[in-house]
Length: 136
Image 1 (cartoon, helix red, strand yellow):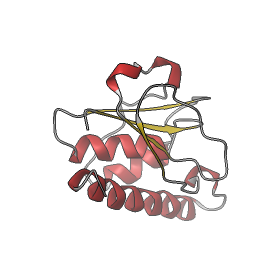
Image 2: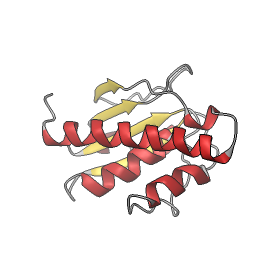
Image 3: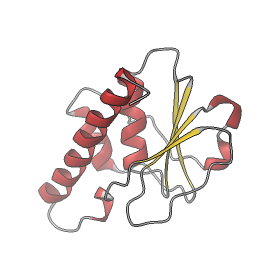
Image 4: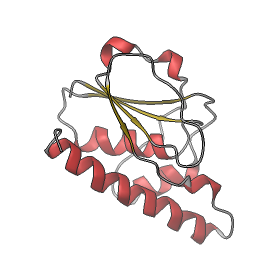
């Protein structure tokens, strides 16, 4: 893989966490980015739960899918659960990992953080497997 793009609607939680994890575990020559169709801001909970595993995404910002150069992407992973995922018109292998949006969880801070941790752990598991064996 030369370039991985993670897509979600707001580019605030799942796609940002996936970008951070992939940057930490992908080969250094792999370009990693994330974007959304309606970018907002990176969720503080996403920053916090990645910091727990020594990954810093505090410098990340939400980006529009239109900002991503298609020529640099050969793998697109959409992460939307119930929402409608954005489209990327470049020529790339496409994977869909429909994960529930942890940002949609209501309740106490501990409950919300648990939702973000669950998403983080699932993303880490899937990315580790994908990067070890891209044909899997």
